[in-house]
Length: 143
Ligand SMILES: CC(C)(COP(=O)(O)OP(=O)(O)OC[C@H]1O[C@@H](n2cnc3c(N)ncnc32)[C@H](O)[C@@H]1OP(=O)(O)O)[C@@H](O)C(=O)NCCC(=O)NCCS
Image 1 (cartoon, helix red, strand yellow):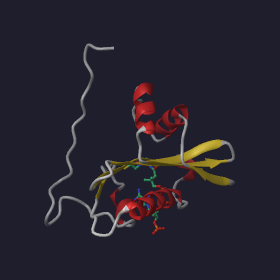
Image 2 (cartoon, rainbow, N blue to C red):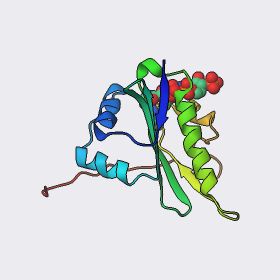
Image 3 (cartoon, rainbow, N blue to C red):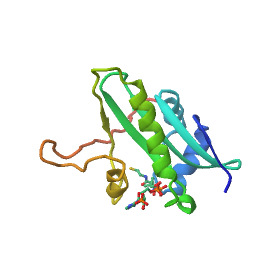
Image 4 (cartoon, rainbow, N blue to C red):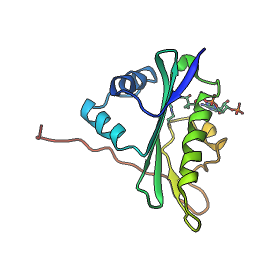
């Protein structure tokens, strides 16, 4: 392996990674917008091939979201996921001013909770927080 790290990813590589981890396709325009508006992206390559990525959304206030943490199956369980999440959370930490607090949210895929727990995230519901919740929405009638 000859791994290198960058802070951007081509939308086509993003789409390919989603496919390799078995996630549903997303419209290319939404991928482009999402990547452009991310607060921070990390992309891992082996030689020229993109093998992993993760990204952070942050409103520059007190709410942030970790999303699209993807490691190609052949590269999993080798510390790449941990490296990417640590890189992003260290960067976020470095942005916080004294007196600031921030909540970093994520929506864990099934059975991935232990991976995130090892990185300091708490499982919900818990004593003072209910379940995380979400809602998918679809565009209608407008191209
Ligand atoms: C989940 C995922 C990002 C983990 O990345 P990874 O590179 O395989 O994880 P790492 O090798 O960095 O693992 C870090 C630690 O978490 C553990 N871990 C990783 N995946 C785990 C899992 N599914 N269940 C339990 N523990 C797990 C590792 O054993 C390791 O533990 P250690 O530090 O005690 O040795 C990767 O499996 C993946 O991309 N899966 C498909 C897409 C996906 O579901 N992403 C998560 C979306 S929320």
